[in-house]
Length: 197
Image 1 (spheres, rainbow, N blue to C red):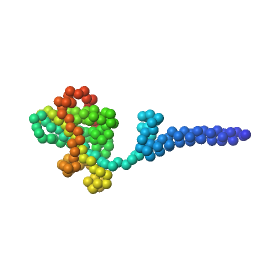
Image 2: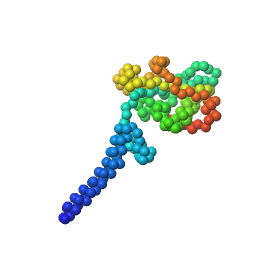
Image 3: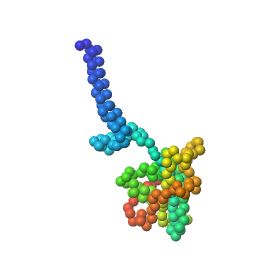
Image 4: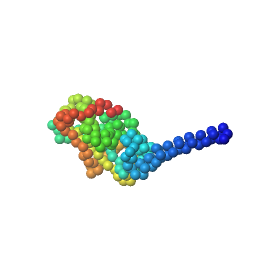
């Protein structure tokens, strides 16, 4: 066998090994995760995360959520809106700031309650720092509006997507999603979100 044939044979073996490796550890898992929308049990958390990222959007979203934040001061019955701009001006995710992203996805199922309590505490502290002359905040609530995909309510004017003002959202569309009283929060040991920007 000539030297050229030996080199060709070695290249064929190397390319075959690489092809089998890519096929079995990348293409097959991505296809499985994307089609079934389930993790591969033997893959472990890290590999399943990579396969999910590689498959990007394995299922379409059926709704779009927007979140609004309100506080109630000690001795008052009225709710005061805390605007998205008051919570953070940086918008790395388009129309929403990091708080919006945390509300939508933060913490996973196991840690979601603790993450949302932490966001509630951040909203309270942020409002109190911006309005030091006001009474202390006694409650924070998160309102959510859910727009089904394809709904005319989701339609916006052409251009950059903006979260509508709370006053523009019909009251029937709003739901009180979470509510926290701060006597309860101060007793619990909650993690802190210092600066979400």
